[in-house]
Image (cartoon, rainbow, N blue to C red; front, side, top):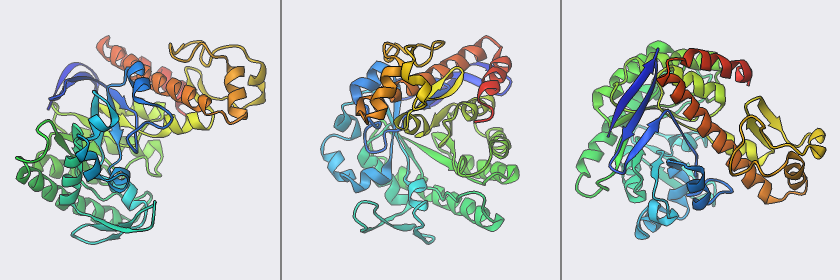
Amino acid sequence: MHLTVDATDGSARAGRLHTRRGELPTPLFMPVGTRGAVRTLDTDDLERLGARIVLGNTYHLMLRPGAEAIAARGGLHRFMDWDGHLLTDSGGFQIFSLEPKVDEDGATFRSTYDGSYHRLTPESAVDVQALLGADIQMALDVCPGLPAPDAVVVGAMERTHRWAERARRRWDEAAGTRPAHQEQFGIVQGGIDPVLRRRSAAAITGIGFDGYALGGLSVGESRAEMVPAVAAATELLPADQPRYLMGVGDPAGLIEGVANGIDLFDCVLPTRLARHGTVLTDAGRLNLRNARHATDDGPLDPDARCPLTSRYSRAYLRHLLTVHELTAMRILTLHNLWWLARLMDRARVAIVEGRFASFRNDVLEVWGGH
């Protein structure tokens, strides 16, 4: 795996990520398919959206239906009938949000489904994701919530480094049995402290992975706190490998990430907003549940007409929401994911044309307060 940088504008970059499956244009937002599906959508919907890559959640998939069950059916690609790229996270974020019992070897946690106990180590996280068979798997990290005491942040970072070494060792040991098309990313931690972020970036790149992610952000800190931490880490990440900012999906956060050299993003935000009746538009967030939309015959976004959803009026979609019709959630999800993909496409064009600074200012003028 390597990244070809086609253009830069300041620290922002537009490129092409080359994998064994194909090529991905960057910057790129990845829809989240937690349990093997993007909520309310099917594979046909994703193909119609032009989605290039989908994220699956290791924590949920290892519990239901189980990594072995998915492997027995040809892996996650075949299970979903999805020919595009797939990335699986390590499950670390979900596990640590459940207050597991953590020791140097790994983490013991309870299933949200039936309360049963399970254990995940850096090595077993590699093995589980190998069974799932995605194109990219993530090393298991320790993700503290923010704000947190300095000792907690430093301890999580240092354990992440030790676990990353073990994950890469296991990756190398499994060379003959894991999927040949699969790549492995390491994760940089360090909270919002730029010094710690640089220290972590140096340690993780020193181990040597196929790509690098920034974890432990968008977990309670402000954007003003997040951006310097991102900038500090990306300064030390290899220019010819992908950079992935985990869990960021608000338009302002995405654009600030792009401005600081990030290539890949994921977040449940656009799909979660859609299920609650909130739409992303060029004019900002639109709450379709507001009564004023009951007689509005206009499209969701007159300035950005999604080819899959613009046939429906605000009045019609608000009606579907008020009667709890699931069709509304699907249509709004399609719109929000299309809108974010378009935002990334527009950012790419702005970088290539050397006008990213003005584009960034335009986006932040609308979204800076959200």
